[in-house]
Amino acid sequence: MVTAVERTLIIVKPDGVQRGLISEILSRFERRGFKIAGMKMIHLNRTLAETHYAVHRGKFFYEELVDYITTSPVVVAVLEGPNAIDVVRAMLGKTRPNEAAPGTIRGDFALEGLRNLMHASDSPETSSSEITLYFKEHELFTYEREIDRWVLA
Ligand code: CMP
Image 1 (tube, rainbow, N blue to C red):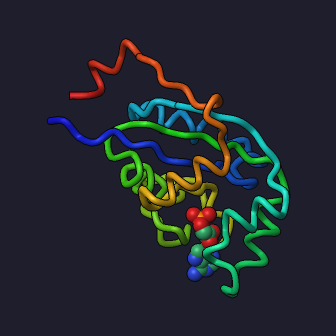
Image 2 (cartoon, rainbow, N blue to C red):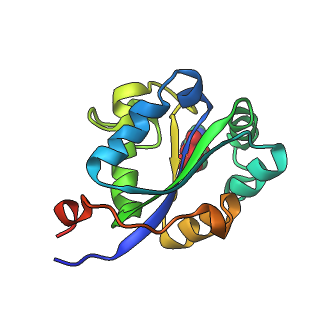
């Protein structure tokens, strides 16, 4: 079956970096079959964090969210694969770690509140705008992998 190949933006948040979980988290996506189209470590400044979370401006958790995402470097990556947006979100688990099912990243490694380890785009529109926010065109790669014929049907 041929399914639409999508790209989605993920962020390993400050708690993931500080807890030494970068490789654990990224390896899950690689093992699932996703291709990494781009990846880098950055330290979000306030302006970038406020742009990223503009949709949440005014909500009760907004200030804390912006403070938290700017406390430490993060890893941003673009993952590519069939239905990437929904599949990656499912791998993260529910936003609130206490509700996330075992087997998901949050359900296996996170417990509470804003310490939910990851961000991932939630729609084709947000993935497109978030990828543009973090990556220039020359930082994203289109390449073939030998394994793709065993991953993609
Ligand atoms: P993230 O995927 O980074 O996108 C927005 C973030 O806001 C989300 O993860 C949570 O960390 C946070 N968030 C969303 N909804 C709530 C909520 N109801 N209470 C607290 N934090 C929230």
